[in-house]
Amino acid sequence: MTHARWHATDTLAARYADGTLPESEAWSLEKHLEHCTSCATRVSHVVRAGTAGAVLGEVREAVLREALGSRPVVVEGSLPTPARETPAPTAPTPRARLWSSRVSGRFAVPGAPGRFPRLARVLWAAGPAVRGAWSLAVLVVALGAVALGYGAGVAGARPLLLALAPVVPVLGVALSYGPHADPVHEIAAASPSGGLRLLLTRTVAVLLVSLPLLTLAGLLLPGSGAPGAAAWLLPGLALTLASLALAGYVGSRAGAAVTGGGWLCAVLAPALTSPSAAPSARLAEQLSAVLDGPLAQGAWAASAVLCAAALTARRAVYDRLP
Image: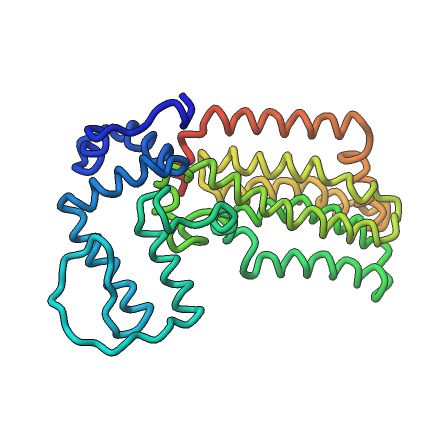
């Protein structure tokens, strides 16, 4: 049923407001409210008219007062307060207006006036995946490889980058989702857009940052017998999806540790333990065996498809991912 073919009735809104609506129907209604302003307005009025309206009004007024300063704030739906003489308020600063819009969007019913614009909501959803130390770490890896290749004259800079590149997005996803990465993780995971959808949004954000930077760094480095600079893209995608599939069983950080650690052991251990050749040359041979050619790339593509199917089959698990 599409959003345009049904609307919330007064009875449905009343049951949602008093908490008697089943959880599955409540989630369906909340998802509908993101796209239907008329229904969001109806549900908002019913909620404000009930017992929760006074509490929400007081909470919203307290938050706005804290953000805008000590002067009183009049909030629609809050309890009436005695009239008193107050000096004319000054225009709020840009920071205060930003806080006010955020608070208004956070406490309003989804779909009602004051909600975040779609672009702002997407940026908020992807935020932990592209901010903080992780994005800087990706840049350091890319620039460090170029510095090793040209500044220090290390012949095996590209093989080393190709060995590390598939692990970077795996770690980025692990560090972008969960209580350790997001202070409002529980609220976000419980929302209709949470769970696997939010996890995939942050995964895409991680890939959009890491893939171009690391591939460009590989193009700038001499070949040294290693595969092409883009040969790691399919393996990187497959390993990222594999870590997400494992996360449904053991958690995001443990899944990333198993996937990334397994890859590093598979490509670095033979190069470091072989006495017959230089480590850089042996690493280039090992990478050529697992990355080069239609057979190897086809195997990585099939692995990515299988991991994506596993994610889809167990999508309900990600609503409670630790």
